[in-house]
Length: 303
Image 1 (cartoon, helix red, strand yellow):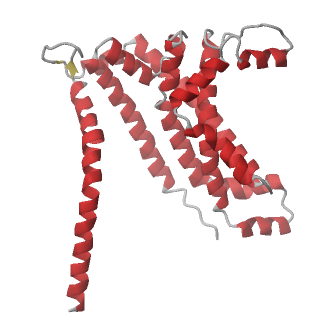
Image 2 (image 1 turned 60 degrees about the vertical axis):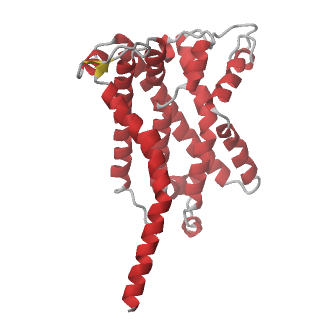
Image 3 (image 1 turned 45 degrees about the vertical axis):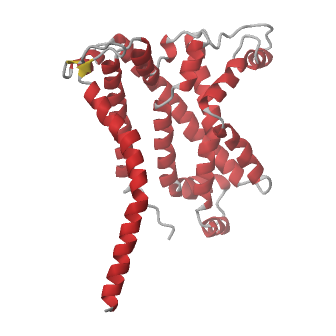
């Protein structure tokens, strides 16, 4: 009798659990799953976005065209330069700031709030703020002139190829370094303090504590931050879009996402843009798979 009652209770829990999950599943199916399937379908057709003509089936020709397109290969190169550079800066500096803040005896919460505050801003607002900073009369030129002891030199932040790439990296770094710093701080906080107390008794220096305790036990957090940072970098769009609309040359910062937008909205080639979206989606899925694969071998024991 008792087993039957438990069985009925479990069935009721499962039923109501399913009822509450259904809206989320429908939302995901309509706004995430269907667009992905539709993009895969459209990538097999040649279609003008504004044309009333029926799409022309071309199979894999859109994908073959992309791998021979200089513009697409240039956007892949731009995305690689931006993503790898920003990724390295984000991971290294966010870890450094996290260790620094965690070792403070006072004002930890204050510095966490200060570092995290740029992440609250939207990408558009962040890019607009830095557009004023990179203006020829802005703080970026003034700062470099002060450091280099020069006067009135324009370093062409929004004109020179290398400076323009550096500018987009700085914007993204400024916006997200605090976000990943907070994640690292949470990871450091989960490490038992008894390990550090034991290391101090053994005479370990702070540098030794970092390399032999903190860094090894932060492997899962470092992996999480690495994948999240790389995915965010590959999905960058707002900064490059606003910089190009402000007059900056598009070639050095024409990343894949910006290329997708221009191909679909300006050139009206929705089939080709869909093919680019699917290739980017495959890369993101691959990175997620790598995260799941590596995380299984990076389980940490505090014993």
